[in-house]
Length: 489
Image 1 (tube, helix red, strand yellow):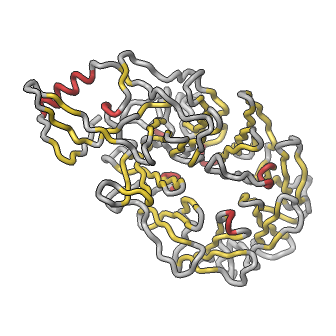
Image 2 (tube, rainbow, N blue to C red):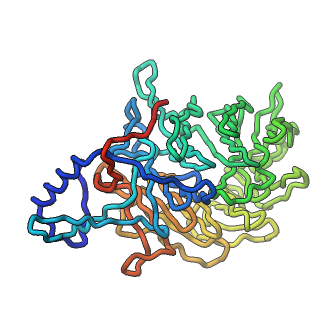
């Protein structure tokens, strides 16, 4: 691999550099950071390209298409995507400027953007079309392409493996589940309720829930004919888990020649499934949960067309709130209509962002008319994330951000214009509070993880941003004897 070294200034000659690197290569193997985050440190950023616990940032260093994954899926070398961690200082990556000593005693400094306190945590591909990192308790949970081969000797890399591993590196990687469907037909979330960690997986029409308590794993299949499922998202360990998310909501088609769907709820505490709505000729489509509400649409067969009304219902599962009198419709001839919609932050109460085929609006349940968010723009087409009062989306080949709660706002670009971010997938961006993680093109083939923070500044007083993923061999912790992460399955 060709290394790209960024010089601020340097008086280092090539001969000295070659000697220094030769000497470095003989020092030993890549080591491990000697410490780990504290058990009670807050976790920030679950469910994306990077997750932070205390001062330790766990991240995927680059992007790899699943079609490129080999049958070992065992990487960790600098040019491949894997899971790394770095110890931050006040939210920033710490650079080092190694001193080079000449025979005459003169010291010259190679001011490259090399980093302190970096190590390889899991040498498997984790930066791809379905990247997910979570930390709960003493474990890191992550997703990686399946590396086994089918009967045609082709790697099953479009299917997924879900793993977890201890943060202190004790024990081996634990394989939680391997999907039957390709990643485009799989959805998953992980969150914690009353001290138990739950991983909910929709693998095609099969719905499973895995629970982890006191180090033990339990698995249960809830349905083998699921249509949709609500997948709650909690990014931070100190987030309040709402009562609505103590049940898993999903839909199934009615049988025996009946039309419509059944909306069901699985109680995580009692481990029992019950019907929420089971009325013939009524079709329910789940959108998800937000705050203490479950959002869904209901369409009635006797109503002509394909339109449906948006409702929200709280954890009592009584008295649904009609979110909008404007109906969700696939027909462009319906006016007014909601062509697509998304849920907003829980602080906004019962509300949605929707696109009417021309403009994007924000609407609370008690509003007669919605607030115009963006004229002539569908921010939901390439939606990245709704974070607080801001919606992040891809447009004009970059990441955009706009405040959706107030009319007349102008979209901003959170990442530096000088960087060529990979914008083909919304999953290539991760917004964790003020941190924005994204892949930047390094050369024709490789994309590496960068991040920016609007609340931090660099030495020049500008908005802080830094490369993270394109690592140099001299970045890593060096030990006299080589050690490797125990990654046997």
